[in-house]
Length: 255
Length: 328
Image (cartoon, rainbow over all chains, first blue to last red):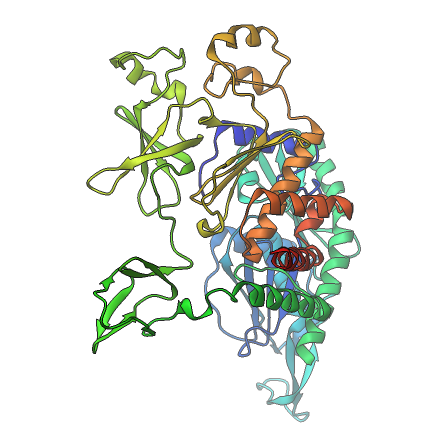
């Protein structure tokens, strides 16, 4: 990232204080989001999300995978899977079981950052949501007369698929604090001016699924509560936008 | 369209393609057979003694192009000029650059070129304005003039024998640029003109089109005589500052850009972004036309980066060029 001169830094901070960022957006406006599904044919589901020049691809596979970078993956894990006991998880894991207590699908979600122009977590969260909605889990036939100790025989169908239910999947909103104001969808120049950033994952019922804080500055607890309420407010618009974009992308895909 | 991150619906795509086709048909009337790709034969009269310039080579008795571009002929010299080339500096070019290093007796600037440019301490006016020999103390105080990551406007003075680029900033209009934003566009979209500094009066903003593809859009700064600076400093509410006087920058941190000027700056910056993504040559007239278009449609500033506005700008530009062509 190129450095910024003092004059430019003041311009950015002044802009955020006056609610006009360098490209004219308001503090709580996202850049245009562009969703494309089905970009990786070999995966069970995949999606590519572009926010400005940030470009990320997420793929969902029923097996195997590669490593994510640690910070992004722990943040995503916390936001999507909820606590250790699985309570409040975004994804309904019970839909993945094939035989109760014995065999189930393992979902591996991989994210790839093609180009970064700020706000990676939000883009990755949107890509994961789009990829999951694009995921088709093959239907499995279980032979009925297996005894309870043996491994049951399963027949994985190649034609019939079950769509994943993604209404519970949360979306990640990163609020970057610059000066005394918060902005969503920060560009790299704005991120370099931040004092701290809080990423909150909110689901469609307006409930918080996960929370992560980055940045060196300490935050007063009342500010965090304020940021959470702002995130909930922004999440409504983002959900509508994402759902319409995903539906449009799926419609394009089917053609 | 390189770098188009937009989702255009079908009608928008059609309109955009139609506008671009119209523009292409208007432009290629003059020298359509001059554009060549690699290994195309360049038509030369075999009897003339032709000098083969850059981008050409001799193959089987024919002069063949080695670049994709346009054939230029100057007297006996035939060469191919590439279209999307890196910035090619010439003496007298106005440049906007960023300081990346403060070295002994010079500043090194990054200017979107294959090498870094050098601004010597002796090519820069001293803050007190007196013309004198630079002493060791001046050298130690270089950081008070320009620091790392500062944005500077300067002029190309010349090349050294090793290809290094030298700049000079001896006039009042050159110097540090503050209170604004720097945009990067492809260098070939900024053509060499007489004027690169523009003061848009109705918006109160300064626009500097650097030939290297760096464009500065910022608040208007009055170019003042250093002698009068003392009186100006006393009136600390005024955001106007001498372009070379960096002492008052500490006061300026608190004085914010007025809201309307900031809106105009963002609108102009977005207009330049739209033009650069569409690949149109960036001049003041075109920028003003785009800004007026956005104001007449009373678009929100960030909506200028949406798909509908791109298509409108392309159509408007096609109209403008066709009307220009008809006047001739």
